[in-house]
Length: 589
Image (cartoon, rainbow, N blue to C red; front, top):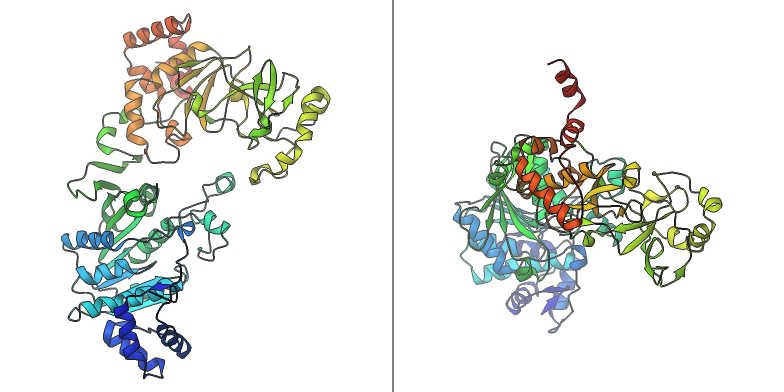
């Protein structure tokens, strides 16, 4: 049965019918509900009470529940909520104050009532009114079934979580033992913005990213992350605990930012759950737990929630380095420094149907299945993440038009020097104008990004940012022209093949693989980023690598790919990687 779009048991409906039918004042009704359930301000006004009485008089109020998954609303099922609360109780956690900042249907509140015996006050906040009612109905149902249970004072506020004043709870109950628990929305600020939601914090770029970082996505964040950090900041000086069900990326970000925030939280845990089983969604999520008002900790222990045994992995900060596996990192931390070559992201155009081409019977075909004629000068082979499977690549399956040699370069030259290419691009100007990213605003026609001198280096070493394969690829020129990579790839470029191959061998060594596995997160949207790759100190690897191993790898590449490489330039390679001030000191040694 449903009332106000909220589930209600017949037992609760009968109870409300019997207890409200002769009451004409909502204040009297609120008093009765308080005695029965501990809920403060059950009704906001007389109209609300009369409406409920009228609705309850109709026996079949079946209203289909809307799908709120688009808002990141994945309600915790009662079984999981109870198992979570029981897990906390097994740690001898017994709060006096329970706070659920996005309480939804109230399952964590009910599980808290069932598992914790010393609760004095419960505060729930929920923006969706049907869930407010359902929470209240569930609380009444709990006490009808368990009439002898302790009845704390309960406040369920119909409110935007970003408008609720949690500070007043922290001030009023500063000496009490607190538990902040819940399952905040699994959605980003940009997603809610696109849905015209008002359930957003006022300051969406809450990490204060500036410039291109804010424009291209680093300013986008998970709402759950904002709520979790807000709760920690509000209550970290109080005795108690926090447990939230959030995406894995949120937990990683919280531990990462702890080095800067230094909140008084410790015993950080990531209890991994099966999101497919619990919520029928393919999202990596876990329970994030921490103890409040304690010496700041900077690492997190990872568990399997269902087995609840000892931790099997630790991630977090080792000195000033953030790593995904502290135990394995210790063995390769020597090479964690700064790469002597700058890793770059590949070319970005956001117009693949026009800019990306294939050759069919010697003719270029675009993504719109149009056969086109172009001058060859601005057409280059291009590789995507899915292409980077072999050790060495010299042929591409796709091509792209490269309109600029550096970001922001004027493109008027195309009209006079390459009229066929210009005519083709102008004919598809609407496709370029439809690009949504603000990085293209007020830029020359047909602008691209991720382009520079490095793009035109003849020899490149590259890796996919998307795939979870710890493998680097050597890219050779095609038809005497450098090959481009798209923006899902990262690359370093070289003018001679020897330096590129030396780098390839070092990057594909066991030492580098073990290091990368200890600093990358398998559930990240991009396993490899520029920040991660710039941590690989190729000079340290080169100094410590076995020369016999180097020679063996070179011989294998020579034989397999018909190369003719030696170690004759190895000392020169070491020299260019050595910082200038170190080289100068060596001259006078």
